[in-house]
Image (cartoon, rainbow, N blue to C red; front, side):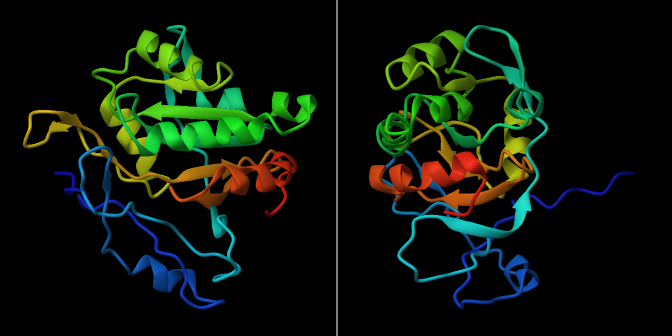
Length: 231
């Protein structure tokens, strides 16, 4: 009989010293989640280890880059979208959220959209921004397309089977829970709020941004991310 998997997602916390062994971070399992629009004070799980801490930078450079999730989902045109194949060799930002989120999700995507417009046209064309819904029951391809068109029509929206989405997020240390209802009966999707940047050189997820990253942070860092350099 197969063993029962540990229900706790893998979560990595930021290094508190300039140099800290990744193995020590892996031993830490206490974390919180963000429930968009729920009024919950919990914080999202933040990841991994940076080469420099207390540097004032929004970006966390990961000591051990994440492998790009093996996700095959449905895009806003109703077509199959293989994340690895479609973004191979492209600088890519991946975010898990949902369209009915009233705060963190639209703010994050809007910040990236504004920063993207500051890039030269050739670099804009290289970058892939992928929004994976955490609420596939409501986020149909049409709903995703309508929402993303209001932010930046170049952004890729993906939906599909929740278990597949949840498993893909877990490989990046991002926790996603099924949509539930709050005390007022309002549906709420609880999810981590990290943006993971993947290198065009290695396709590895090597930089992480939390929900506090601003337009200025992305504007400053995107030129480096497009080249696969460290911000």
